[in-house]
Length: 185
Length: 194
Image (cartoon, chains in turn cyan, brown):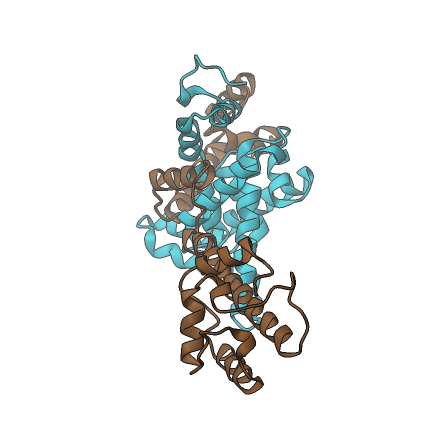
């Protein structure tokens, strides 16, 4: 239950959800402000380039319309990530169908991510970007959730539909790949 | 870049920047960092990786997203994408009602005329005349357009004239502009009147 005495900025996700369900629109705005950027970053890491704002909005709409299915054994952000990922997969399937059944291969996402190098002025950051682009999609996803969002392995496992141990391995393999790429230069 | 041998603490490095560690673990890690160059280097690498991910994220407007979410999730709100769904809500019922009304209108007249043509009594058994159709202006226009004199009543029409009228009915546009209120009232008030 929400605590009316707590300022929205300090309220937990569960409290904000409760407030929103009671009609407090500011609570929904707070949730959107809190989680939009991580969702956009997550979508970008999965190769999405266009329509990210719409994707994030659709993620929230779908989440808010099915809050009764939200299980509090995971965090709201983890749940949002899983919804966002499903929407992205739906998009990719639609795009694939439009492209006369051409299979979307792993390399596509890597190439799209690597194309962002030009956005980075720092040479070291450019090298890191190139290294990240060399990761497999799953490694990059796990690495992003761990590094950019600070998620525990247990939560990451829910997003990528894997196990905690496997996610730990993916993270360290990703880190080793990046280090090796930087060390080879 | 070499790796620190303290795997447990090294594994916690990504969480330090997010305040996602227990206070005790955070204190242990900071103490370790002060003495471990490998972990400091790795922490720097993770910070650069975070910057890369941020730089790769297109700019978004959280205000616009919040407004869209509010519209789509509150009662009376319009789901995004608004065009397709709103189109479905606003357009379909009106067209369907008009089409259904047209079908009912034409089917009623056709069935009645067929019954009369082949001698079967209409429901209710009453004789049918143009005036019996409650002076329906639309009917009169229809009969006139078929070149028929209907001042006496449908029962006075010959088989050829009825055939001409049926042909005229077949050529009538299936979709009508407005609900045929006068005919509807006639049907409701006196369903056997035809």
